[in-house]
Length: 145
Image (cartoon, rainbow, N blue to C red; front, side, top):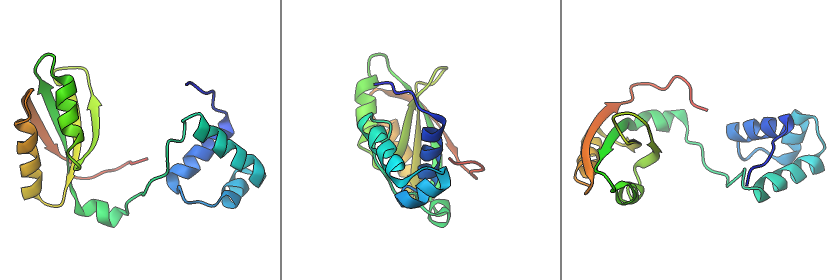
């Protein structure tokens, strides 16, 4: 379902992306709207599926302690569904993107150590249907929204 978002809806979503636990009264103050108007907007955005849920945002201190990497994956023809299913089962895969170009997927993974990262990359390499991988460790994140 496609929903037309207003400028205030986008402002509300931006505030929630900074702090999903921000009280409605605080949101209302920052948006210069009434509390009931903001509550109604939230409910409308939730019903429409624009807001699918609220989640934990990890601290920079904790996030920076993890080793993160992009794993570019080339898969065999007609194995996309099974490879994606196998990758979805790996808790350390934090995002999975289909892409154009010489690779088919980019998996973003997080691990507590280089040894664990190496184990994860090897786990991905041996998934049936995976033909080739190329790994890049993320050294620093300069923008994250």
